[in-house]
Image (cartoon, rainbow, N blue to C red; front, side, top):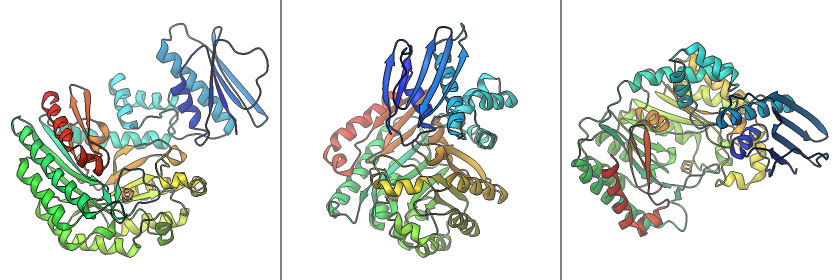
Length: 489
Ligand code: SF4
């Protein structure tokens, strides 16, 4: 339907549209900026919000229904307070109008726990006061506030161990056997006609050169590696010989003697072999991910994972046999065709395996994914009871003694929910916390990777080319950009 947002005497477009989208996630809007509220009645569906004399006002007319709210504007408000107050008024208006309550309230950012940390600092670490702010100013529901505090408590202990002279290393292997329907990463399908063996060989050679080059740069500093993370894509989608070459280069190029954690995302179970697991173990990675996403075969088929539930169980048991005692399993709530019962069975089935980490994602329908292109599938996904799935996962994981240790949100997540990393005590992934809370420098290698240099509370980013073809083509520039790291560290 056509829908216009009118901004009266203010231009807080981004913040107000983000608040409106909590209630109308799939709607596109026209935007009109006016100095005064029109004196004539407005045609069509609209939300109008802004300043009228000494008041802030918000009104909505949609599908023949109308509602308005207003509030006296305080003289002491600065721009930020004015913007927040208008967003709160819009939230309350739409909550009543739609009879929906977004569980994170107007906390729309990617990192709720980081925002909680800022609030705690403002109230001198008084948890009761911070909770009141989350409740009364951000309108977060009790369960989400409790979850955010739990994650914050776990992270507090980890952050005490943070050494400013250490950094994490990220290595990107941006290839996958095939593309999952919901994927929006710039990952290249190996079984695609455009991905030939030469491209991958050239990529692996260049990646090793980038690792060696960066290792030499870092050797001249007093910085030491804290954690290493191989992500993608699916790092195990290349051959064991290629994986060995890369891991060997990391071991030769960097001093790993002070390293606390080494992770390789095996990811897709159909790429896991004994040889690859042995290589991973031999070069010091103790933590791996094997991701089923769901234990419902029909759902796996519908999302184009091209592996079976059995493949997942086989890969998991092979990893145990090879000796991995820190395994993560990713699952997704809200997948096309999944039902509450089949999601509950997935959670219970994974719990039976007793992995050290379970990461529960909420489906996010991003622009680049095939799922978004298939409008019908997306609509079907939207209609599932994703919030019930997430509630069940949190209840079962808590009663099975898993701790929530990192949490983040993405745009366009179903029901505006969250992704949560759960672990058994002592199995918190340091890298996941560091990247999410942006508190440690991450030096990243390979296509699609971006380094984040964290210094004195500031973050500088250095981007690599996104896809392997560009990365190979502009490889001189890739090395050139690496030189910036030395100036920023
Ligand atoms: S395995 Fe992950 S990165 Fe690869 S296509 Fe699927 S969702 Fe994307």
